Image (cartoon, rainbow, N blue to C red; front, side):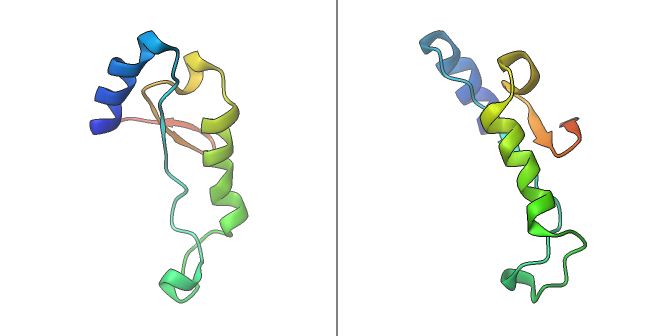
Length: 69
């Protein structure tokens, strides 16, 4: 929820603020028990970094789109 406050506060300065949800990825942090390859999870971060403002600003983004809060 703090991300939404940052998005509102910084929008006037031209910042685009979003959050990403990579999902449960197999990494060394979970003994590789995740259901997805980390490269799949990284797609959410790439969408946040490269997406158009209207598609990501103030939203939770996953690899297929946005998620409801």
